[in-house]
Image (cartoon, rainbow, N blue to C red):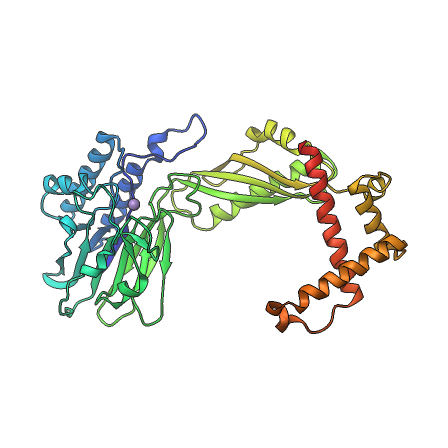
Length: 429
Ligand SMILES: [Mn+2]
């Protein structure tokens, strides 16, 4: 049995925070659903399974329902049935739609009551699908685990696919909290879950796999990484196999670039450009399907004397940073500068303020020329370090004793951190 799995489509929504000039309809949940349907027909799957939040709560009516209707009609014409459950977004609308979509669209678990449907292949039963939906009257909130009311039934000879929209291992959640343990105790071969927009696969030896397929179209910068659908193959007596198939035209990623040591703007900009370019290349060459737009949240880190000017300088030029690789174009959607200054210790040590005194201490440590005051400080520090070591929780770590070399490194590191902190406070003031 080949089953194309998806969920959290949120039909009616489009990928957010794209640059001006991109056709947002091409980057919509509806467009990804259309691509998913084409894939199902092309791959001659036996079932399309949708784990809830198929339609967004605030959906654009015609975009969502028009696309759903056309996709379902195309699947039906190809003889491919659909199994779906309702989530906390479409608890009210999906049951109504299911009635108008007619046979072939199987909404399971209406009114929060588990129900199942046999799926045949070549006229013979080949799979049993069992599912639970958010009740129409729930308002999108269910505080108890639906698995408590899981029916006791004699496991059929064929594999069983379980479907449910809910929050895994979050007992306090109001969105149908379920435990991995209770799911795996049920006579189900594979669980298709919904609610998380990022894909998540939970495999456990000798027990059912749990899969959050994630939205087929990435919709928000918080939903990083590859998005698509999953091809599941189930056969009696065989371990289920799943494969991620990229479908999203948009991908959101966090990209970090370290500019430590960059002494000139040219060098800093070269490193940033190189970091983003290398990321696009990695993604584009990693098998990214129909991906067109890579939206990056750029974080610049490291120690550099340019520290204070980087933000203004980069922000001005970010629009010029638009590397492409193959069919994928990248843009920086957001910039975070988390660099630190390279403190000039000799310069600092001329001052009589706290950073100056700390800088003098670090220089004295490096030169192994401690003043009397420094010696006293090291003495205090050693005593404090020994006290911490003797504390009960650290007993197992208390051997070997602290070497002077180690203490010096500890003092040096802490002094540098403190200098950074003090300078940052001065800057912010
Ligand atoms: Mn949800």
